Amino acid sequence: MFEQADEQADSTVFIHFMLSTIAKTLAQALAQNAPVSASVNAPVNIAGLKTHEAIVLLLQHNPHLTRQQLDNLVGKVP
Image (cartoon, rainbow, N blue to C red):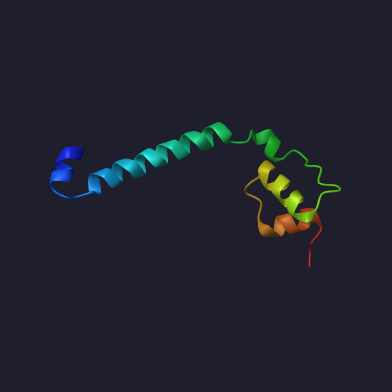
């Protein structure tokens, strides 16, 4: 397969192969690192942390938080 693409000077087959391999690898990594649903809603103690540290900790526990939710959680509501 790759040999024929090389002879034709067409990298489409190789690019498709690499992109599908990357997609599979990312899917496996996400599945392995996915938070347990209970921990997503578990309270996170951010008392005493600097704002950027609190944001990182909150996003580690729930990467789907919006900017507004983060502002509310760290007390930076306008």
